[in-house]
Image (cartoon, rainbow, N blue to C red; front, side, top):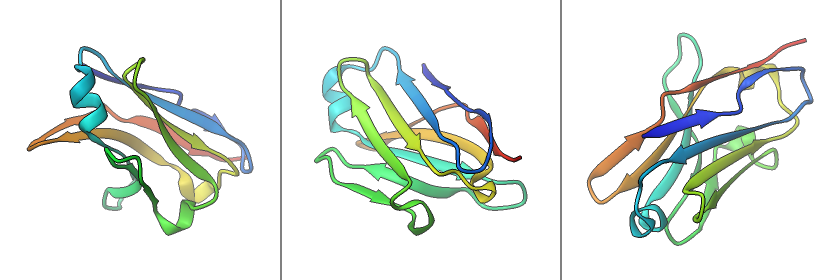
Length: 116
């Protein structure tokens, strides 16, 4: 079971931290997975926002570099997306995903709205 939390409404310039818990995932699969955060705004394609490989290297969408940070907690089987200095264009449904071997495990999606 993959459960996301932490979304909501925030003013421009504000911060949110998204969490994604992979309940029941064994440690070796969790640590061996590439962890991603995607987002999808209305009328747009889903895009990859941040990625953390099993080797802990990270990559970010250019528009979020310096503002978003992806991290993981192996003990809690949870990944996070810290989002700072949020902008209205960050408004979207955010999805987490773990990729291991040939399997993908998706979260249900959580709404983030940046508006004054």
